[in-house]
Structure formats: C-alpha cells, structure tokens
Length: 116
Figure 1 (tube, rainbow, N blue to C red):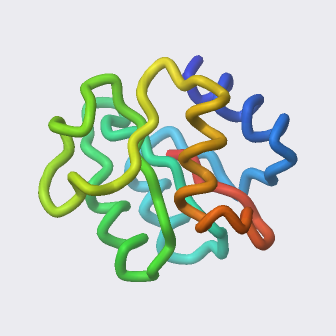
Figure 2 (figure 1 turned 135 degrees about the horizontal axis):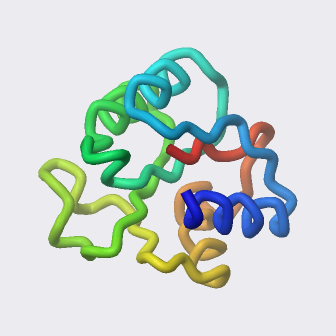
C-alpha cells in the first residue's frame, strides 16, 4: 500500500488524474471492465493474487498498461513479457518514461491510470 501511495503522489506531480486505485483483484477487474481511462499500471501481485486477469481485460479493451514489479521483466508470464515494467521502488523518471511509452509520447487524453 505504501508503494501505491507513493505512486499516487508521483502521478499527481505529473498532473495526471487517477481514475481508480484498487486494493484487491476483484475490484481491479470490475474497474478494468467498466471504467474509462487512458492507461493502467498494474502491480503483478495484489495480496497474493496475480493481476493477469486484469491484464487480459485491458488487452481486450486495447487499453495500454505496464506492470510494476520488483522481480524484473523475466518474472512476467507469457504473453506479457514485452509489456513495459516499472521496477520497485518506482523512480519518478522511470514513471515518466513508461507513461510516454504507453501513450506514444502524446500524453494521456483524459482520465489517468488505473493503479491496481
């Protein structure tokens, strides 16, 4: 949760509106299925559950997303190994870089990231 709070502050400093922050997989799935947002940052592990079902929903909706993990690119499951990664702890410069990659350097259009 501390990482989520820090990430929230970094996103606010970038003038991005946070559409939702979720603390469990079911809530993240519900938000991913119904809410409008430009991109998502997904912690790979939420309370012992992997976030891949949310990634599937976002991929189907064609919403760009990155994973946040302390275990590196190799730890991601197929077919997500090519997705951008934010290492833990998240650095502000790396966050800006990943957001630029997700948005094609154009910046988000409206509502900001879902952070699950």
